[in-house]
Length: 67
Image 1 (cartoon, rainbow, N blue to C red):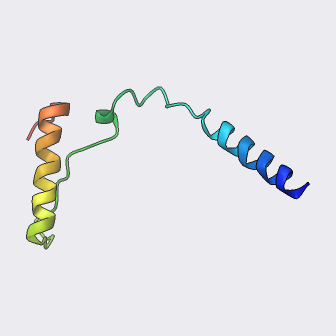
Image 2 (cartoon, rainbow, N blue to C red):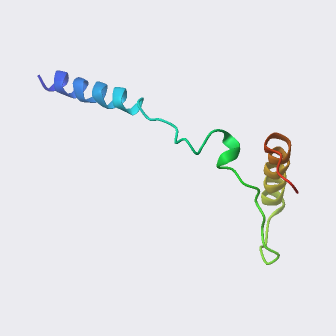
């Protein structure tokens, strides 16, 4: 009896989680992503700086961000 109840609850949870919708104001990945602009006071490691540059370059290419 407990196994059936647990299985039913898991199934209901899984089925209702699939009912989520995307808000209308988010039509593409570019709607929520923005360029990363560190301040002059930020101390960045080489790895962090490389990740920021890669993020911004992809945004320029895909989302047409302006540098």
